[in-house]
Amino acid sequence: MIIDTHAHVTGPMEMYEYFRGYTNVSGPASRGLTRFPISDDRLEESLRDHLAEVAGVGTDLQLIVARPWAIPTAERRAALVMNITRQLNDMIAQCVKLHPDRFVGLGSLPQCFTLKPADAAEEMDRCVNDLGFIGFKINPDPGEGGTELPDMGNDYWYPIYEKLVELDTPALIHGGPFRFSREPELGYFCQEETVAGWALLRSPNVFREFPGLKLIIGHGGGYIPYQYGRARAFRLNERQRGDASFREPFETTLRRLYFDTVLFDQEALELMFKVCGVERCLFGSDKPANGSVVDPRTGRSLNDVKPLIDAIPWLTEADRRAIYEGNARDVYSRLEARL
Ligand SMILES: [Zn+2]
Image (cartoon, rainbow, N blue to C red; front, side):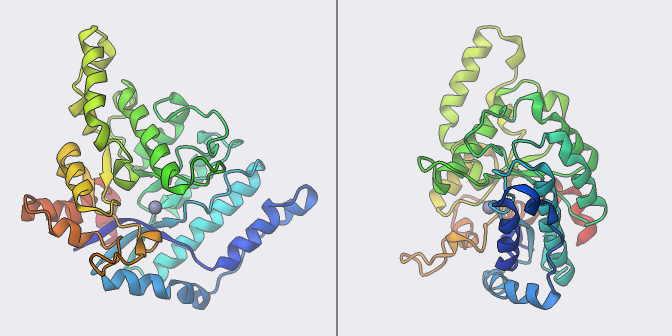
């Protein structure tokens, strides 16, 4: 079975037009946001190309979540962000209901500068208990690069970690909307995912406080695997200075995180598997998205990741099974009940 743990569904674009009509105005007009109705027929129509593309590469099951840009994190009115997040999660649940053999849901968190991590708890409960979701996506920088929010090693984030552990749900750390042209999407996503990952790896406390916490760094862990050597140097220096907070080798800390295979290059995938460990890597394709573009070298979409993994000669059959299916089943504890 091929389980794709990193995928987004857009849904009908007119829904976003409706939301923008409220988030782009000030004053009383912003208070009337009601549920945007999506008929099953309209949702099916919006899913047609997505389903065809995913079936075309042999993926059996996708863990789907709203698009990273869908939560309006620049908005300051917390009630609006909360409302839109709920509607997006409901749209994902509607997709799962229409295609239970193809989709499993992940929840988005209500995040913006005026919402604190504890404010997400109620929606997280609803996602798992009412909508049947098995995990979440966390935006590590809801300030969109423009505000100084604590990094993910800080106890600012602990209410979300507590809830994740309580619900036994993993979370995919994934960049969100951005405002600054010096960091467009290509750089911004990987940058903020890397910043989040380093902060978690550097903190001696997060995994001590939450040993059951399961966090996946999206897009191949950002730049983390590539910069692994320098990270080891930092840790060795800390240990040799006798800093009691950092007793464990960096290799051990690194294996407290998980990573996905949203890298569209065989050599990059090989590096991640070697550095991070096959047992920490989950298959993900981010399909469909901009990686759906056809690679002139191969004639396949760049986000057709499985042939890249199949071509790695040193992976065993057991390794491939773990990447495609086994690790996802282990990490997403609630997945088994949905299969
Ligand atoms: Zn993504």
